[in-house]
Image 1: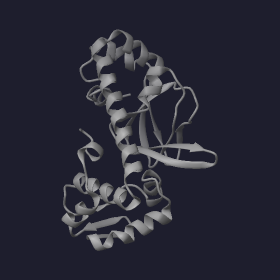
Image 2: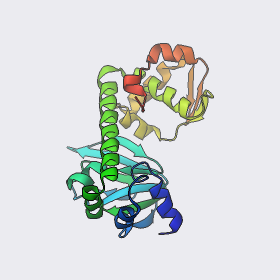
Image 3: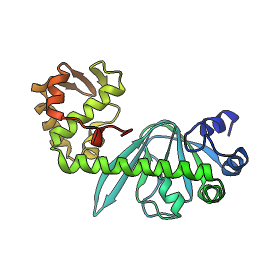
Image 4: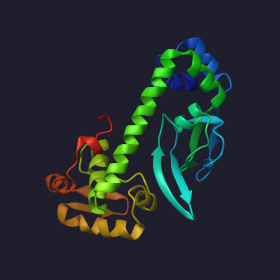
Length: 232
């Protein structure tokens, strides 16, 4: 790993304020790998031997049961994934695969746990990140249980528009099959939901989205901080 790679890791909120000597312990066994698209990085049920950090590219977290599969989340730089399994020394509850060519840092889980036990600042950062992850799971669950498929799609598009600078025009970064799974619907239901949003000023052609009447879309979506605000 290059010095710039170490600095990128140190700049993450999870590691930023920890003791430098403990950070050196944390990364002593770390290494970085480049993966092509559609490579499975971890498998649900396996031991959590590494904490992963996405340095470039994009990784999909997904789960399977009874020959069914669902997309749980996407992870983009610079972010860790499945921290809880590393801290608990427990099996992964999700699998992960690259959605595009990706560069991933791997930190041995035993080193992460060792530093967690002796660095109070790092331990507090871990608790903060896990608390944020828990709140995100609750918000996602509320959205799935309380909203219709059309309302879920409407709120998703509103958030993507915010990330794109509120221009009212942007490209979807997730292919529609994965988007449907993430929103808890079939691809067919997603297509119907896209058509149902046309009267509310939404036009989607391929991956390109144009929103011509944000007020009308928001009147349908009814976004609320307790579900939609990532910092709430």
